[in-house]
Length: 342
Image (cartoon, rainbow, N blue to C red; front, side, top):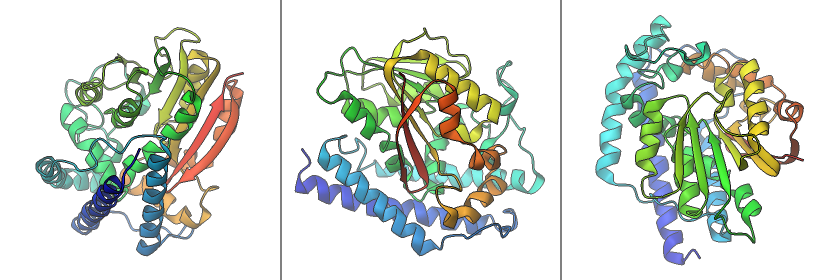
């Protein structure tokens, strides 16, 4: 159970976190002048103060979930200062290359040893970041880059996917329950999941071997993790082999046909009565007052499928795959959907 000391540590850490990451976002934006495209007026854009208010509300929600016992106080609520500084220096060292790609429109500078056979949609430098998702260097930088982008709120948004899992597991042991995480990336979400449910069996699926290596390193303290390098459209997993399937921040980086193929795969590996938890970017229907910001994102960060994602019928995509919507929610810049397999 969370204590007053935990509350103080959490509040102090999140306040420092927002100041740290939001400040670096502002500095990186200033250093990127001349490289960032000018915003096109396509809907309203929230002011900085409104975004900060939304961030505060997110962390208040995060704390209420901890207090309710849905998940534990984050295992790295007080991160190592030395690591944070090293990641910051690496982020700013890479920024000139990111800005060069923004100016030239280059999004195909992949490592020489990038494996063959990757889907065409994946062979690009999303966010204009160096090496795309295909190097150890990129894997070490990725989480820091995302936190800068969201002003320190990315992990708190990820943790919202733990709430429906807590409800699903209520009254039962996590031992013998198996979860498949599609597009696990560096394993940040799974680290929060395993810290709360250490007996839960987990399979992490991702296309990037370097990112899976980073996830393997991050999840080393928790046993019961399996790592599979495979596309979400063709997971080498048995039918009806997972009690829970999670998919965190993947669909906005996929073309429409890939979204539908992965939804079918998620439904295939899920057991009857199992649960699918989906977390990704909000869409224009969720926050019309953020429409200008959403439309600007793919222009500034090379997200070629994001504009199509903004208008896609996500509930329809999973319904066509055979799943039934159970609940929907929104947290800051993310939307959360929960489905069941009949």
